[in-house]
Image (cartoon, rainbow over the protein chains, first blue to last red):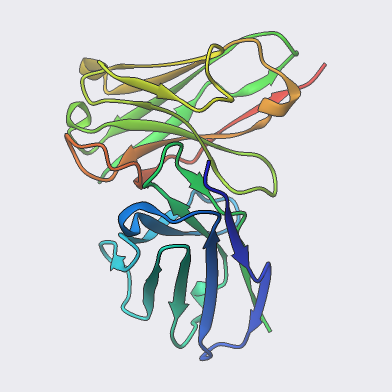
Length: 108
Length: 122
């Protein structure tokens, strides 16, 4: 199965800064089938990005995804207080679908 | 508004069984493939099982094969997961999740329930 490794484990930023979250796959992901989710404490994951770069319905344009092959990135421009959460990447191009272990975005 | 609500979680002894339910509302349940995804404390999510919109196709993660069974009742708008031969490693929050597009198999998830906690302990 494809192992997804997210870095950093924790990212500490101040509101207004840019967040860059990385997701590295153990082998190439088929046709950019990568999604990103946000999870807040006590809540279910929320879909942010699919197809590596397509924002889900209702997701603000400060969230953007990029990448291909084995390297994928979620960028949050001008982080807002509501953005502090855990972020997971997922690949769905190869069975079984797999998730990364998450990056926690903390307030600095 | 589309919604998924899980039930049936609890504390169970190793080797025992449990049945989870997921009640869907606010969307055409019978047109969407559905999944179960679990998340152990402090870990990333783990996909467990898939069922097609009409229930004719089922797929399982290796960790679930032979022990878990997914099913659905479209007239009742309900998804199920039968958990048998449970071990401590199955302790997790179990989410039902909707496949992102109707009548196709995308395997990413645009709607999640709040989760049902399963704790396997003697």
